[in-house]
Every structure is written in structure tokens, then in C-alpha cells.
Image (cartoon, rainbow, N blue to C red; front, side, top):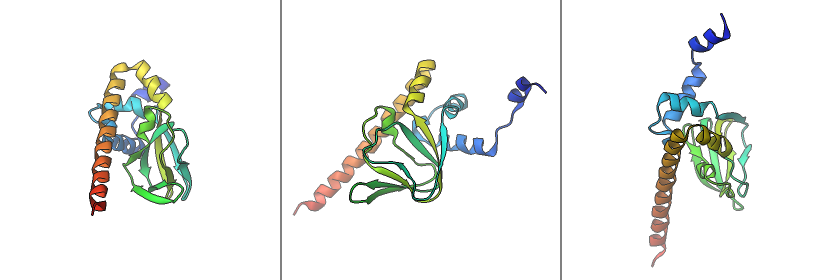
Length: 166
């Protein structure tokens, strides 16, 4: 059978199905159809991390967003090593770096052996050049996601402030 027919009739692997299902749950990809998700899937980079391996350090330039396929990730504030959050399968981190390369605000460490998908800013910008309509959809959802996280952070800060008042 020619390569052309193999590609047309190729069935998705279980791993590809898992990744697609995971992507459907990420707010940044909310509202995208299967063809659009497939375009994004093609530009994702997969990497495995061993237990206690650093994914990125606080202060590093932000180059991309990560999606947890399996494993657990700790988000740690330096230098006091305070665990800010523990992230699990289906969670994502570093989405702000899709907008700019400002320094990471925390360190991310694999708490367990983990597999992550990375969407690099440069790959997203290339996608936007090729398919502006899809790019706008992603950027709108990215803005909504960052806005929601900012609101939640503000609420948390206000709760802390109220607790400190005599």
C-alpha cells in the first residue's frame, strides 16, 4: 500500500487519543473543533521527566506552556522552597509565557515521573501566521484563562488581607 493510502486510513493510537482527550479539557483550547485540535497537536513537544527533575527554574525566561499527560508537578516559590501548588494529569502551567518571555515566577519540579506536552511560544506564533483565525481563538481563550486565574489570585490576596486585619 502506498504511503498516501496509509496516511488516509491511518488509525489514531491510544496515546494520540489520550492526548486529544486531554487537549479538549484545557481551557485554552475550549471551543476548538477536532481539525483545529489536530493542528495544535502536531506542534506539541512531548518530554518525560524523572522524579525530582526541574522542568524550569524561577527566573528562567518563559518559553512555553506545559500540559501534564501523567505524573505530578510541584510549583515551588524560591528561595524558601514553599510549595505553592501541586498539579496533576490534565493541569497546565506556564501559559503566560505564550504571550511573553518574562521570567518564570516559580520553579516547576516533577514530584513523580511525569510526561508533559509543551507548546512553545514560537510554534504558537508560527501557527498564528499560518492560520490567523485559529490563532485568534487560542489567544482569546488564553486571555480568558489568564484573567480567571488573576481574579482567583486577587480573591485569595483579599482573603489574606482580611485575615490580617485586627
